[in-house]
Length: 180
Image 1 (tube, one colour):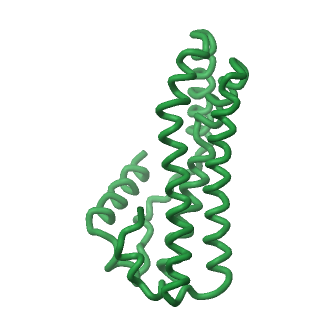
Image 2 (cartoon, one colour; image 1 turned 90 degrees about the horizontal axis):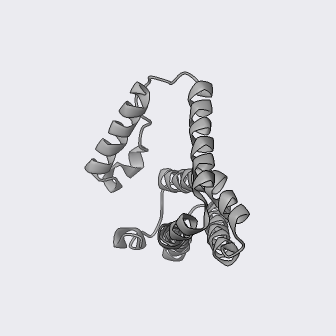
Image 3 (cartoon, helix red, strand yellow; image 1 turned 120 degrees about the horizontal axis):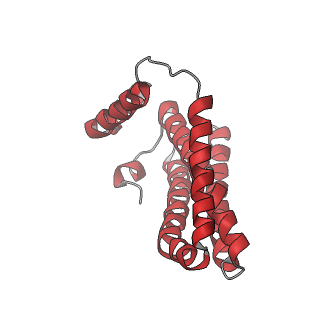
């Protein structure tokens, strides 16, 4: 899952490591606090016990991803990531995280949503939708004023490894976020 380029490195810079750790932690946090986890899964749990094994498996995938992040952080705290073995371990932990999260998202899409469609009543679907809308309204009202400063800079030692399209896409997202 990781680009071959990552596996050919014999050392990673502090900027590369920091960027990867921050991205993983943001992704994990954002996936953990999705509306699916906050509203839909509790509604499924209330509606049927038939989903318990699937929900437990999804939770186990999240646990694997969380452990992979812990492995990445432990590796970083152990010292510089220099040497082919250390780079491979770091990349393997990132790959484990990505595999677990991708598997979870695929299973949600193919199994959880179809189960939810059949097990949750129309009235309960409307209640879940209402909760999601109320949550969106609350977040919109309580959101702090946005910082109109430019987008966050990519560390200089990573510029060669970041495709121009990715930088452009990040700048577009930042500009859209700043506009509202």
